[in-house]
Image (cartoon, each protein chain N blue to C red):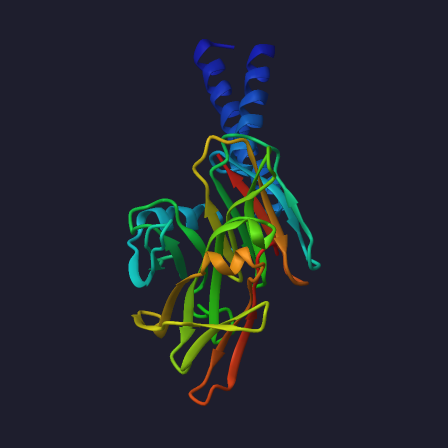
Length: 203
Length: 114
């Protein structure tokens, strides 16, 4: 075989190997659970590239700086809610849902972020952030001792619709006493329960 | 020719790995359905900095980092999002951990990023 013939054959073999590698990889990814939920790689890229809008505050405390509640409405069709020190920070904690169901089928969607634990007494800082539907009049956190913490709601006009946003920092004294949150409850104007989302430390 | 075949095989294997895992990420646990308390952990490493749980539908779950000295939890997030994530930028040796807090008949995958 001539030198150019050998070269052509090598190119064909390499091309087949490239296609084969990608096909095998795709199958491996699908079988290892890569097909569960949103396309993580494209979502990661969108989260890194697209802007965040601050919709509420998380108050500071004697030991911890104030943070913010940020929303991203992504080109991928997801609405994400983050608890973060700033819009530029990569230290964001939270999650996303499809833009057409940003509250996951409920009237309230909250994320509990905390450091320390899993025992309640070991928690150093804990914050609740999230969104509530526009027909919600109030949001309270039910604590393990039966008491409630009222969460301040702030109007958030988003492309996905009108919501209330909230950010709440728990008191360290509660955790020292072994008292932690067990549910987030959305209420109507009469105090009636519209939706309940279980939560908690160590779960 | 033998050398070419070997090179091609290695290339194909490398590409397969690249396609099955995006840059620096390891899927450490996945399940087609979940019972309350079910979950898993990654290996311990100082280089993990992000933990992700991706679900086909919303359900109550927790993701965290667990250090290898006190086994304390760090940067924990509990939520219902179909994509849940947290970051812990620390050189401490740690593992990613995810778990369901309620039963769910939906596939979900937990991934640690380094």
